[in-house]
Image 1 (cartoon, rainbow, N blue to C red):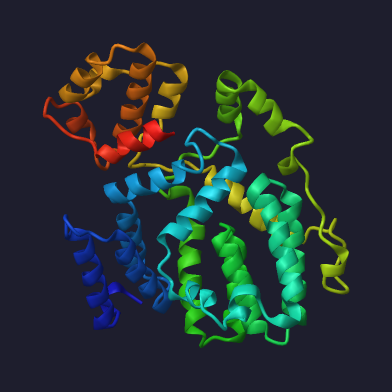
Image 2 (image 1 turned 30 degrees about the vertical axis):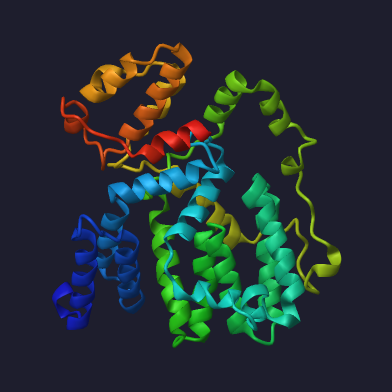
Length: 368
């Protein structure tokens, strides 16, 4: 279907989304993106809606806020793969406006919150196994959870709710490809399920764009983390890599909580191997034209911050700092702020105009 053949109400929805982005004082990129996802739920191939979501996610203030929120939990220089997974999951949670998240926390919605009663113990065991990977990078946990969830879906007296629960579980933990697979199966059996279709549209977009979420640093292999920790906290590094560390040991599921007739956990389904490989390829892809200059991480690691490109007010501010350690800390903090090109493009960074950073930026950094 060509763009001009979409119903008129679709054009009105997109115009509303654009208005939410155009209001400089009250811009709401998350709500604008939500409208884009609603369009994609109705017309999955709507390219303009997909581009609108990408545009909304490149909002400078949104990038700033999400970077700050993530940095409170994960340092941007922590390039371990499982931390990248956590960033994606947390970001999805920050941004999602799907209404289906909320009823599960209301009284009387135990099935939405914990899964249908007849397969609840299997779903909870699958959840625990998924956390083995999400919280510590133990891939065996993700492999086991897939098989446990599939067994629960097969046995459930309410397959629709069970599949929706599993799809939500995978989405909130950042396993977008797996979530899409489960939701595809749900929609094949229940094609009129609008609640599932809306979630499917959102998770599908994240699956296809997870390598281009602008506030998430490029994926790595953990080498930057090891270098930084070796310099700042060698004992902490040794503890984090010790076989005795609880995060470095995969805890197998309780056999009593496994679906009957489930295949051995050593068996990895071919479709799961494919999904895991596609995730690695996606997050390690070149993010292209990023609105964040992530090279600041290299500059900080080398200890060479070029303050000559800072605006005049920033250079003067640094000149008033006598303590070398405090000056170095402030240089790094400013470089991190200026790396958000959406708020501080190069021509403005190089300018002599006075500019003020949000006082919260200074407070947050000093608190850390």
